[in-house]
Length: 440
Image (tube, rainbow, N blue to C red):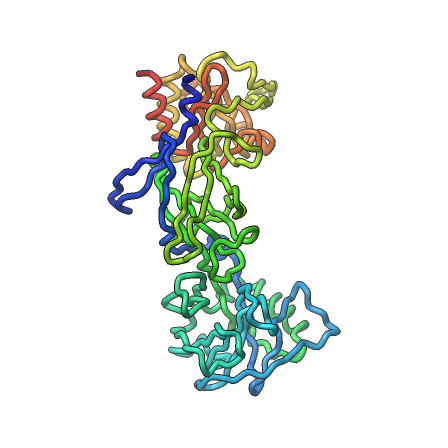
């Protein structure tokens, strides 16, 4: 079998890791691997976003429907409904969490909650929050969770009978940190609130969504989090066409959802040269098992070139005064190492000394092509002189990045003399090891 064809065969091995214990490792044979989705994660987009939940005054025992600023109508009077309040201290305020469900005609896509101590809930040492999990508008039969000085010390789970399914971290909204936003938000809500009495942005909630269940896998030296994003926060992981498979090498303190794959019967993801089919073994959340099986045939929707793929044909601008363009098809017929980098990228800065040493050690046996993404032309032009290396410098644009199907920055790709992809990584130690093994 040809070398590049051998490289596209995928296997699954196990390797001990002192921090995580036994983690399944993606390696080089065709076995199917299963792992339980027994870890709960936070959506990084939610952590970095505003996540504002406005609070309004409970007027007697009456509340109003959720206020959606995007679809707010000045002329329409909001619906109101009577609730049965819990035993509480002081006055009550209310709000809605997003949670898609079908149990209530009142707010089928929201989850109603009330907080005691009214506008001073975030200044009180202890305030209780009641969530209408059974959607009956009766808070006297709901068990309260506790807020300590404007935040929860533990996650608030949407379902009392299905803990760690999907939930939220809660704290008072940091209005001083987002002062201008808070002013504009106060103005917008009060203009559109109608009969609602708004407590103000500084007395409202900021939430971070806990809606990912995942397992950890080793991919060479890196750890990947692979799991399911409960996109509609209904506590069910596996809604086809709604929920998303998530694959990320950023998983602490929050999981990046930059790379997602829709859940379906033929869901696949590709990562650094390899592709896998994703299957959820069971709908029982306590025993959710993720199965990964190797895929050898490339598809257009794969977000990585698979090992064995032909080098894409493109032209790149060379970093020199006359600005000549060079074609990939005109590269010398020998091993080619592509380094896609950015001068201000922390990963590249950490890797650069080792990359320089590798390019010097393998200068005669390989074409070294450094493609810079978004750096100064002058800096790139004088790079070789500055660091005493002899590599071909050029520039990467969005079109080139799409053709190479880049998944990280920096990223390193190795092609053989026939311009077939041999190796793909974001880890410079993996790159060094592969180049050393090529010489043996």
